[in-house]
Image 1 (cartoon, rainbow, N blue to C red):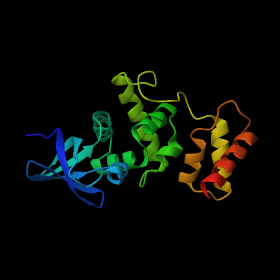
Image 2 (image 1 turned 45 degrees about the vertical axis):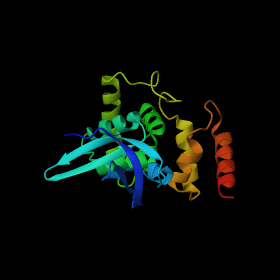
Image 3 (image 1 turned 90 degrees about the vertical axis):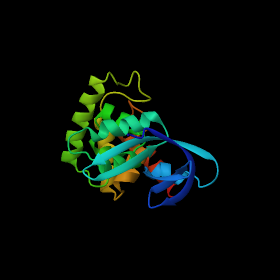
Length: 201
């Protein structure tokens, strides 16, 4: 029997793992960081869509608040050398919409923010995911994505400049992902520095 979804009461939250009780049975769910942080222990019923993973003598349940996120996780772990742990790490770093943006724009730097993912792995994964999206007719036209195309050379220049100033990769990605297009590099750097200054307050 394969479990596809669970609806019940969250009774335990511990180390990015939750126990959801359904009709007196507690199911252990592995979840993303954002799901873990927003889920609440209590009597209210909560539904999770589940990927039921089988491996030798072990079974693990991965829970997601939407069917779309669960499907995206399953697509991720179908990619070359991407297991459930890495798939969960990717969705813990980037929510579904951000991940779609990253694949559409082939943003290697953003994918490298995932712990354990270097440029070689990110490059291979982006190619693989892009092919899978196209095979399933998934594109920026019918996915909740706000961007299309590739990351501009101006944005890359801004990221390099901020990196040279000592800012970390996560900070840089956060302030450059929504910078306007068709703007001079010097102006983009000013905008990014203003965002960094605001975030540091």
